[in-house]
Image (cartoon, rainbow, N blue to C red):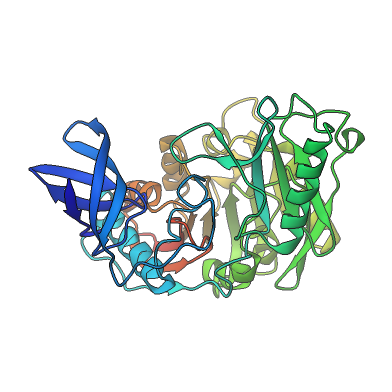
Length: 401
């Protein structure tokens, strides 16, 4: 059937209506006139793919990557960069209105990426040892798209990908590996297999360091760290701003990206991180910076917030309940924060909350609960940490009643 794309929806799909049906079309541009095929139907919505571009939108551009359409890594290469930014801003507004039920969304701008290509300093490559494929999952599939060159990787990671592919051709990669993670440091690259194997780096993973805004962070390929180094200084400054005071709490703190700058602003900082390796790196990074008034609780965030008996740090959590929290920052994974985490935050009644999110939908869901708890949404900032994809990083600031 023939359709015209009206706009881009959260999730990156194009919205169209035809023959009484609501359609979501992959890899479309707003204003495209297309011939599409409906691949599946869920309820009253059909999910479609493009058969032919009958009349391209002015917002459409030629994707430079030969794997575009097969590889599931990028879904915005068909859009001009200006259109990508506009679509992401609309995605944020749509989620806050529709999911968050926030009637008045603060004005905000999206800070563009300095580099639209070759920006990814962290990657995960899927490995199919049977078919000898190394790359990314195909779109809407668990099949591996074999990729020899990726247009969004920084040069150091592209070299690492080529090295792994050479090892694959020589039969040197472990059969039990499911994927390989890699991250670039100031000097060198850390690579880890998805299954620990003595055949990869003799069972060891190289540690690297990364300097950001005057701070130095030690980490490795098994640590979470932001993908786009070019925007980290602005991201940290937007998240923390001029906040200062006696006590700050950080949830999902990782290796301490925000912990170190928070410790320079507050007299006491408590950071909570469940992953033991990340917590170890965070303690090391604080020690190397000479910041002794920050502590890392290596425990599940929800358990810590609820002060569950027997949980490491639970006694300190109960002591924290008696304190006035000046600032609370959370940077959860894409799935957002659990309900018990939001409930625990509200029980602490921090003066100010900063929510750093990589998914506008889960951000909106969680903001709705926080606002219902008596907080007001003061400001938004957005950063294009992931050019050529529909993903966007958003920072929301809220103040208490």
